[in-house]
Amino acid sequence: MRKGIWYALAAYTVWGFFSIYWKWLEMIPALQVVAHRILWSCVVLIGLVLASRHGTGFRSAISSPRTVGLYAAAAVVIGVNWFVYIWAVSAGFIVQTALGYFINPLVSVLMAVVILRERLRPRQWLANALAAAGVLYLTIYYGAPPWIALALASSFGTYGLLKKTAPLGPLHGLALETSILFLPALALLVFDDHAGRGAFVHAGPMLTVLMIGAGPVTTLPLLLFAAAAKRIPLSMMGMLQYITPTIQFLLGVLLFREPFSRGQLAGFGLVWAALIVFGVDGWAATRRSTPPMVV
Image (cartoon, rainbow, N blue to C red; front, side, top):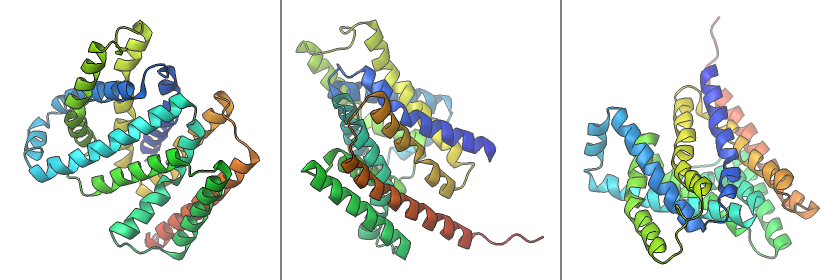
């Protein structure tokens, strides 16, 4: 189990530091960066699928129209999530992206209630009420809803909901999703290049290497996450996931010097209180469901 914890820590830490990588590409239009992320991720993932010797199972899975339709919907949603995140980082809204991933688990719970008709425990209702109060407070403070945070939380929550019934594992699923988006991404890059807006090979060797590197840096934490999920309980994965937005938040405030006022602190404080309640409830539920040890 110790190895699984290290895999999870590595995955969530890499995701947390993603904002630095996309910040290096801030002079490239976000849509082009997303297209390169899709393109090179697809190349890496298909290579890994072939190397894993599970290509036959992958081909049989994609022969089902229902499976392809499900992953096409997931591909669109994750593409939107990637675009919003990369654009927000480039535009200087890293703190708000952190808020999005802080509230994402709570949004996922609400989706389960509304769509899957799951029932919440009292503490889960309290956690969602506190989070809603925090978002409402920030809406009043900003003068508008925190759209970036809400877009990230809702898109990733929807992605998780779609993947709940998906038949493929993380590696094969993302390989199929990026394959579905491959041709549109390639068409966008070719069109922009012909229009004189293409950055690839025109923006210098360093940026070109970073655009190609978007594939491996997307794939690495996914593989670490998949390895961790096999080795440690889901409840522990749930608690460790807050490493990512915590790093994002600290980078936004301390490294990139984004403004963070007392008013924002009050709104974030309500969300953090919600997460504490949510975590305590999950811990208590896990303890109740774990049979006592027989000595």
